[in-house]
Image (cartoon, rainbow, N blue to C red; front, side):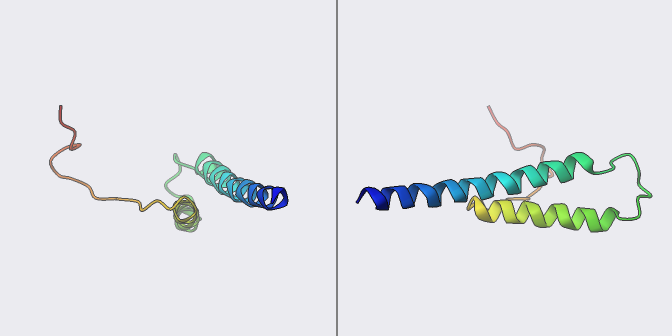
Amino acid sequence: MAGDQDMFDAVVMADESKKMKVLEALIGMIQKFPYDDPTYDKLHEDLDRIRGKFKQLCSLLNVQPDFKISTEGSGLSF
């Protein structure tokens, strides 16, 4: 049974490693994105890549992104 636990731990670590690699790739893409250059010729291509990487990360994390934008402000209440 100890071998089973070792295999399970290896699978979990591999899964976490993949999540971290995707997250690091997304962060790198965002950091390299040329925010100050609206004439950047690959703007739409890079945005599509960033969007795709974000969707991949959400899928790996089992997160459903919610992009609803409220016209009533931030929606915070105290």
